Image (cartoon, rainbow, N blue to C red):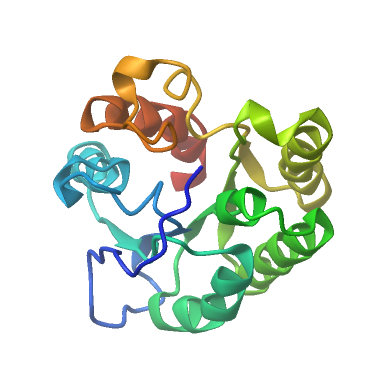
Length: 202
């Protein structure tokens, strides 16, 4: 969950890669762009460190941008797939759509198009779901939650139902905005992602 408009992303490889390179591409928003913490403390960098230790040979590309919407990600994905030719796409978008109250049908369409584009590029997809604060009401929150579950089933994509599981409800792990984890919460975020990502690396 987030609502930070700006351009703060991190990349862990700048040059185009060969098709044989084992690459994880992260396409997300400020939840994946280390909002208000050092890049080295964010879960995406921690993923890079873990892969270096446990699955040598993998590269991590973080194409996340704070404030990104699903439409923005959709517009950028084709070029990212062509440039980096990832084996796995971690798709973490939708929080800004939800916080801005954008139509859920448009979010679903954008996510579906990105999953399809990854499939055409022979890239496995791990969909990282998000949840909204309770003040958005049960109808909208439930509708948003259902999009991730339904798309994962329909498109046969791997799914993390809630990226901030066990973190968002712990005030000691969250920043004052109530939306982004502190550095102390990022290892838990990584563990949540890792459980579903590890099988995709085989």
